[in-house]
Length: 457
Image 1 (cartoon, rainbow, N blue to C red):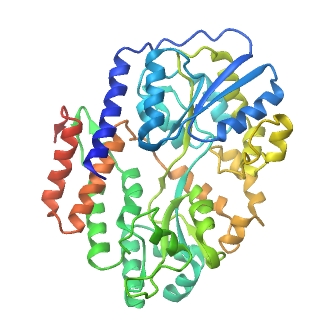
Image 2 (spheres, helix red, strand yellow; image 1 turned 90 degrees about the horizontal axis):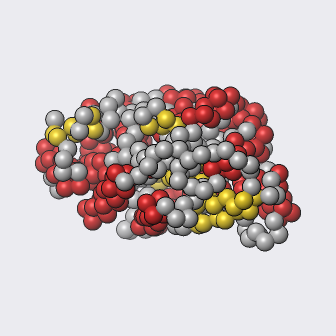
Image 3 (tube, rainbow, N blue to C red; image 1 turned 30 degrees about the vertical axis):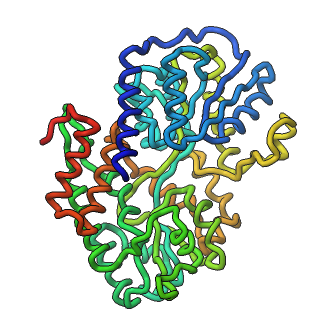
């Protein structure tokens, strides 16, 4: 990641800290009746679908939906300004995984700890609650979980391991040592024509999620030992030709899903597997796989991790706290979450409630944060397009297997700066631009530009 972008992120984080100094963390009075206007600010359509269904039961509520994109931090900046100004503050805000901690650690979000019994009743996956908890207060809650898994091509597994059975393939990728051994097997048997992953960067979420310590402890920068393992694995993948050296979200990456990736001479090149979360199945895999549909499977992979997700929060200086809390209590019910997970909200149903909605507004289902709901909904996944896409495997079973082991215990507001800086240092090292020691020092220097008051261990 370029330093200019890191600096922009640091400025945004600094802005949150400045605003925090003048914030008031006294919860607003929530006595009153449900009604009035519920202002919802989001970067995606999900809350509008939910709010539309909410008004079916509460027609006395009007919805004011504010949609802002996240490009170049636009959403975060607009939200920061609204919270600081205190005027027209949304009653409900959505927080993406990339910036949830910035707002959770600010004094602007209401304490939702009184919903803990509701969350426990739904058996909410702990990592989603941990991400929204600060100083013992639950300040953001998530209706969805986004555990990460390893997707792989069944035909390539047959070719290089003699089977495509997920249970056996998981043994070949059960930890990082096994992962690297299997990557070498694939490289050797394919004569270098099949890569295990697109890039070492795909593994970054796995290492960041499994640190034993947070990045910052008592204002001191900590480099967890597992991050040195990341350096080792990344170097092996690059120097032994086991990664395709292509970035995510680019043309070559999408082409690799459909087996149409070629080298500079037009020769076909394949990628064995991809590290993507729950939503990665529908997009990009199912969107871009073409003729490889049905030739896929998924396994937990070497390390549990999470990628993405969105959290609800209630600003404590919003005007309609009563309705905001009623809305969250409505969303976090077993009935609603079951409907959300099973694709109940078709456009036809939504238009019957509000004919002014866009005709493209509908939701096909989600892997929700409630373990109880997941267990009930999982059998419904049999026979769905995603089930057939992964060769008759139930993806929900694998997502549910991984989720209890995902940890966000060490997540901090500054992670987005430090994770990006470390990934950049790893890339500088494996490309030969810097030595190992110089890459680590480059990481430290980069961090100190954005967070100059940090102490170095």
